[in-house]
Length: 190
Image 1: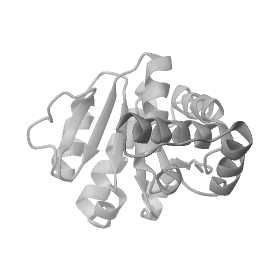
Image 2: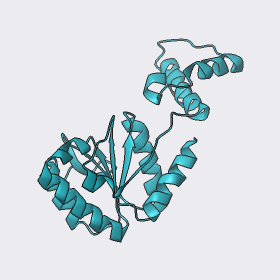
Image 3: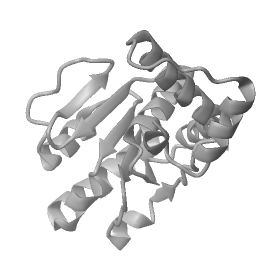
Image 4: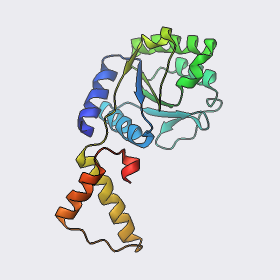
């Protein structure tokens, strides 16, 4: 599945008022790129959260005070009126706390009425049953040849510019290398 198809899919889910999208993946950079492109197309703000950094608007705005705490984060989100996409890394593990699970349900219900979306990611994302019914799970497929070729070209250019390695690869050699990378994540291919 191409990046443009993934962007279209996520855009459709956001425009359909889905309050929570779950993506089980370790490819955080790839999810971030996908969400950034989606937010740009929808002309919506994108926020990124981790337990170590808190909530910050993309690009590069400093984190909001106190939002590294998951319950404070949800309280902050509940009070935000702007239609936005919120990318929450490894958040699901906190939903075992009943208070936090309840707050997530309340935020989800509020978001379903105002076209804001939480995107939860992690290697595995397990949610309590009362939350699971309000989420849509999106399967992020492994990168296609075009994405793999782009990352390969970036790495080769980087190595050449740093004058660490001289790379001489013709078109057929490049295709063989891309073929060898098929089935890997972008991080593995890099």
